[in-house]
Length: 111
Image 1 (cartoon, one colour):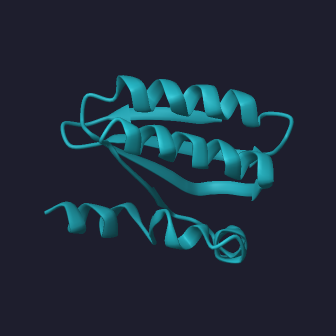
Image 2 (cartoon, one colour):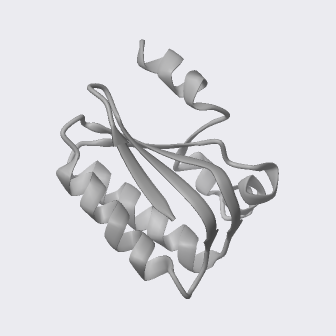
């Protein structure tokens, strides 16, 4: 479901599978842990392998992003598929989240 890979610049979180009401609380708990314990002040969530996201999963991401901002950490998403990106656009959260096509695009912004 979630793997965390730390590097000197970023904490990379790779999500995989479906995130819905049945597992959104676990996702939120895991993301909260990553954001709170992140030594680099940047958290990047790679959603390339996410094939479903409902409102509960979306709220877990919003909660983690809000926490990151309160802790003065950067929280970004990459690899969001077109079908899931539509959810961000409909809810206008594409204006709130930093969305990148790929991890390489995100890293280019860091440099």
